[in-house]
Structures are given as structure tokens and as C-alpha cells.
Amino acid sequence: MQAEAASLLGQMLFAFSCVDVNLGLCLAWLDNGAKLETLSNSIEGQSIHTKLETLSTRVAERLPAGSKRRVAYERWIERVHAARVQRNQMVHGRWGVEAHRHKIVNVIGLPSGAQQCFEYSLAELAAFNKELCALERELARLRTHWPL
Image (cartoon, rainbow, N blue to C red; front, side, top):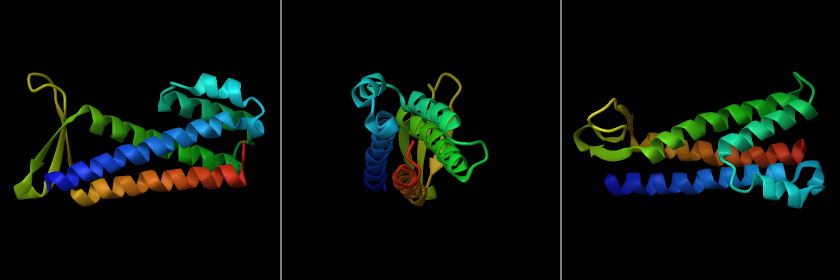
């Protein structure tokens, strides 16, 4: 169970980094890459949170309020923010296995302080990875159909 959880968590890191890199490319290629070098340099090293805020600003500037295009981007941004929060919890916590309950446990915080405990089944970890892959595909679809 521990080996399977470790494999799923490793896959999550790969999937999340794909979302992050593709978000960066989306921002670098604004206006068909007219400012590719300048934007690439400004995006380099930004957190995914900052990239999402930048995308949100650009979407608000370029797409009419309430339009199908804008709503689609806004929903995608919300989903990535939620995934980002969950990924941060996973990366910054410590892991254990509750074998008798078939749960993988992620604990954030020191034992002497306030702790948060998140429990996952292997299926839940796999589902999170599928969500990350879906987010990557959705961004590609948005960029193809409604480039910024």
C-alpha cells in the first residue's frame, strides 16, 4: 500500500508540474507570442498562484463578462486553485499508512502544535491525478478555441 501511494504521489508531482508549465506557456504566448521573451522572463520563477492571478487579470481584461469564454477560463482557474491548495497540503505534510483502514494519511504541522490530518484512499489519490491531467487537457482546449 505504501509503495502504491508513493507511486501515485510521484505521479501527482509530474502531473502538477505539467499544469504549471503549460500555464506559464499560456501566459508567455499572450497575443500570439508578440512579447514572448519579455513575458517568459517575467513568468520565470513565479509561483503557480501568481501565474493564476495573472491569467485571471488577463481573462478579465480581454473577455467580456459573462461570456462563455470567460466563464470557461474562470472555472478552470478556480479548479487549479483548489488543486494547488491540495497539492501544497500533500507536499508539505508527512505521510503514513493506516493499513487496517486502507487509508493513506497526510499530517501537516508538528506533533507538539496544531495538526491537520487528511486521509486518502488509493482511489482518491488516483482521482486527484486524473483531475490534474484533465486540467492540463482543458487548458490546451481553452488555448486552442479561445486564445488570449
